[in-house]
Amino acid sequence: SAVISQKPSRDICQRGTSLTIQCQVDSQVTMMFWYRQQPGQSLTLIATANQGSEATYESGFVIDKFPISRPNLTFSTLTVSNMSPEDSSIYLCTIQAANYGYTFGSGTRLTVV
Amino acid sequence: ELKVEQNPLFLSMQEGKNYTIYCNYSTTSDRLYWYRQDPGKSLESLFVLLSNGAVKQEGRLMASLDTKARLSTLHITAAVHDLSATYFCAVDSGSPDKLIFGTGTRLQVFP
Image (cartoon, rainbow over all chains, first blue to last red):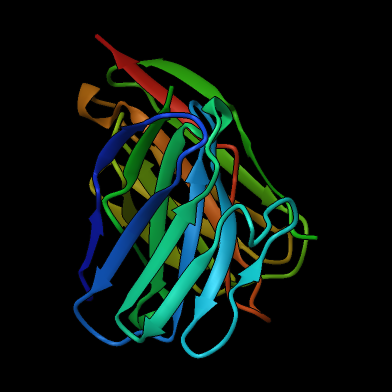
């Protein structure tokens, strides 16, 4: 099955700054997804990123805050912009794998101070 | 809008006991997933259930899916401490494909 490399694994950032998270997949995939997991909470879908088109954002998430790039079929980035402490979360990228399975990256633990 | 509910939210159980976690969802789907998450870690796939009546077992865990009732269960048999983790169910309603997660069940197994 496909392997996802996600980085950074963790970061501590100052409020007002931005952080870009990268996900690299070892095979070509059509759809990539970005999730947020706030402390002690479940996972919430931020957006779906298909190569060659604009990302589709879920309710409550906007492109200005979470711009996503998907330049090719193996790579995507999520930027968390103008961060505040409320953005402190784990961010995970996901791909749809073979046989309808989903594979998750190792996650980025973000702390905003 | 697809909603996924799990219960209980928290489960403290003694080693050797059996228990069931329930996952209800609000719209038609025949694709349901169970994941395990250890503290500070990403998600580990446990089961992928793709049809009504699907049942899968791995060790002390067994998952089933009833698409008519929009219900999946994760049954734990003779719990051991190593099963302590948070368990999530997730549903893919398709059109477009995307996973919607349940609230999670934090399982703690004690001696």
